Each structure stands twice: as C-alpha cells, then as structure tokens.
Image 1 (spheres, rainbow, N blue to C red):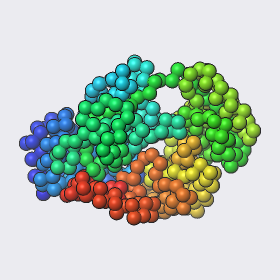
Image 2 (tube, rainbow, N blue to C red):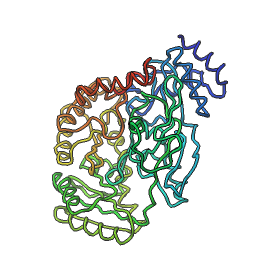
Image 3 (cartoon, one colour):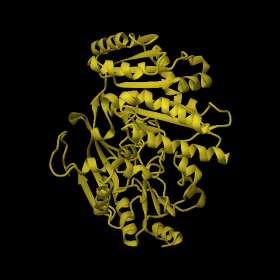
Image 4 (cartoon, rainbow, N blue to C red):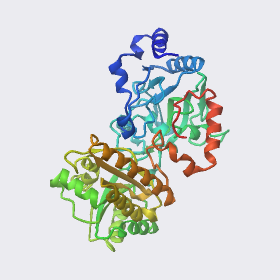
Length: 466
C-alpha cells in the first residue's frame, strides 16, 4: 500500500487526534539517539498515538490485514535505531499511554501502561516506601515500556539486576490483533512457574513479537540509608582487581562505576570545579540498605580499596555524596565537550565483557581510538563489565564519519573476541544486527522461528535484532 492510503485509512479508523500525518511531525519520528539515524533518517508513513489497548488492537488488525510494518516506540531515547521505521510503515507511539493503573502495596507490585516515565514511577512508589530498582541514565525521559522492550538496566544493575527480574506479567497485542496475557490473566503472585515463560520471552524482544500494552512489575522496599566510596588508582589493572576482592569479601554494592583517564579528563574539562584527581582510573562504589549494614559495607570497601588505591574516601553525608557522585553523573554530557567542534555519536557504546577483561578492553579501545584518530571517552558499570565508549567526531567531515564506523565495528568485534557481548543494556536494534550470528551462531535461526510463530507476516519492527 502507499503511504497516502495508509494515512487516510488510519484517520478514518481512529480520528485525527490519534494520528499524525504532517511531514514535520513524521520527520521527528525518523530519529532516535543513534548515530545510524543521524546518518540515514527514515520517515514513517504515519504515527499513531493510542489511548487504549483497543486502539492498539485496531491498528494491528489493520496492519496485519494489509501487511504493513508496525514499529512500537516509547520516548525515542534508544541508541540503536530500534524504534525507527527503517522500512516504512506505522510508528506506534506509546509514550502518551502513560497511566499508573494500580500500586498494589500489599503485594509489592505496580501495574502500569507502557508510556509511564521511569523517574515518575519511582516518585509515586516512594509514597508507599517502594521503588522499581533498575536505574537507566535516561530515567527522567525513558518509558517503562521501552525499558521492558530492551531489558534495560543501568547504574545499579550489579545489585538489583536488569528489568527482566521485575516483570511479573504483561498484556500483549499480537501482530494479528489478538490480546494475550503473559504471567497469568488474573495473577498477582510474585512466583509463577505455570506454562512456557512468555513474559521473559517478551522482555528484551525489542518490539519484534508484539506490542506491550500493560506491565505488572515487582517492587522492592526503598532502602533507608546510602553511602559512597571513591577510590583513585594509578594503575588501570588495580581497578577490576579491587572489584573482585570486594566481591570476595562478601560485599555486593548497589553500584560500581569506573571512569578511566579519558573520562576523568573530560569531566574536568567540562566542569573544572569538580576537580577529579588525575589518575588512570577512579572507582565509585554505592552501597544501600539499613544504616548498620551500609556503615559496615562502606568500611569494608574502604579497607579493601585502600590496598591498591592512591586515595580512598567514604561518606554517608548527603552533600558530600552528591559531590563524589557528580563526576560520574556528568560524564556522558562531558564526553561531547572534549572537542569544540565535536559531537558524541552513539554507535558502539555499551559493550559488555567479563570483569577480568575490563582493563584489557579499555586499553584495546584506546589503541583503536589512536589507530583511527578518534577521540574516545570510556566509562561504565564495572561491576557487571558493561563498558561505555563515547566516540567524539565532527559529523560534517565525511572522513571522520567513515573512520568512526570502522572504529565501532572493531569495538563490537573486540567484545565478542573477549568473550563478551556487543550490547550490555541498550539492545541490538538495527545497529548490532550484523553481529547476531557471530555472537549467537545457530541460535539465531531458532530466534527467527520464534518470531515466525508470533509474526507470520513479518510486520513487527522488521530488520531489527537479526
């Protein structure tokens, strides 16, 4: 079908208040945060703003009958082209479908629609002394539906894990418009081993199997205390070695972050008043829980880190904790400022490697950056080996664009070579699709069979994942 016909049909089906058809509106949806969509934006034929599950079903039935591609989308903060209609069709913008349906305090769970913003959810949960633990860097913008679709994690994944560990049930509209419930139609349990686990199958599926329209999440009690340790190292190898020793001491911090020398330099350039120590690496450890356990864990971390670190500081005082954490919190923004004419590009930015190979990975990325003449800032969640790489280039210089493409390709290959993954938390989308068979082998063929079972016409977010 032609785009004009699709727009006309959707306007008739849902009304003009739920369908965007103007060129300027559609252009907005041709991007996410990825470098891929900066280089080659693709405009959808139409954008639908559903207000109910019934709206989503109506769109999917129409798309299925006419074999039109559909791309679910949250806030568009993704970095892999996953929520962009690279092959035409309909973008289903779920960001306004944002009701917190119920906070079930007695059963430690909450039911939400996919457009609920992560930070807003935790703000509401705090009124009940609860929280939803995954903590992505885009908390103020990203939607819970997007987090589920990409199995998001973030700063506190080392202790609290990824989104999948909190998803108890889902309402899902399938490509043909059927409505199913994963995790039990009426269930409010925290444990359920009945049937095939379609809930976990949908988490991280990036919109290639169906559209998530309601989410039942497990919540945790909000910690009563928090503390932060900052350790400064003259040797890069001492940082992961210290992390391992802290694990061996029986301590599980809520967060463990690393800034290497490139990130330290970027932060000090961006905000000189932070004045991070000049070093090969800085580790930040966050602990949370009850006050006595926080004091104990903080002191153990301080003692262990002090065996290798040049300096170590431990604090539970809110103002000082904010100061210690500030360097890490501004790193992503600071990365873009290492060149006056530069832009940070999101392409190979979240590889995951074994903890024992973090130092090797950072050194290898530095060599690759030198090889291609690209400025790169490295930081990440060292507790689970999730390394963030921020290349900074002038995107108006074609030679630099080509060089950074080569750089990020080698970074992805490096991750696989070091027994890691091309993505630790941001997903595959279209950016990492070429590495699927290299990373998963024959399993990719069985992933395709699963997609075929759900999406026999291939209309759900095509050419993503594999």
